[in-house]
Length: 314
Image (cartoon, rainbow, N blue to C red):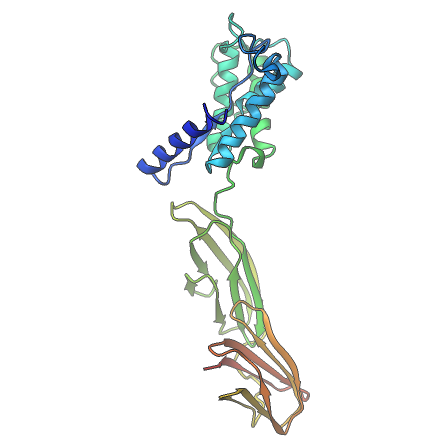
């Protein structure tokens, strides 16, 4: 296996990628011979029986798929399930190795569900098989592939949209994402605004519920979409301004002054809390921030007034 198969599997995948970088390679997991591989049984005992041979084929094809960033069509495992659950269906031709018409039909159904991630149950083509056999083969192929895609590496390299958002108050929402396999981002913010950054802060002009649509896309044009609702309860950078509140930059950090005591919170553009502290009021207080930090700030005075805005540490 290590010398006679794996290097050639890699060469095949590399050749496909060289000609079409966005092509998705699928390895066709075959089935064990009806009574095992008697020709190689003496030299390799695990393949002496059907069960042993099928287990080796499963392990080998999944290894080739995992090692080469490819998917696997589990025809051999669909074959095994039919043998286990419907032994009256003969999947083999007379040599005990090649497929019968039923075996070929099962393989075709498995490949269809692998390629399109859709069931074949209800497909009208029968290959001249009786309706009961067709229904059983369609059901098995669909279930083996679709009940769990991960074991076959199907879709594990697709983009997965994982948007995040944090309410910063005063109509400001910090949007970010933890998407998988995505290189491009598109946001429809529900108020006519759009964005293409991975993370940013947006200010809504009016209160209400906004439906946000986020699309994560990879370099090959595959995408995943997530839709969620943002509730904006208050808007405006300082609806109840704190008179005399100020933020100044200094060589040794940021200096905050407020005539009233209150709570100061600084958020990163990803919505994470960088600083949350009580400001005593009526004096200058230093806030430590790394140089170059851009944050959204919010100060809530004990009297209920609110101040907010973007804070930049030069």
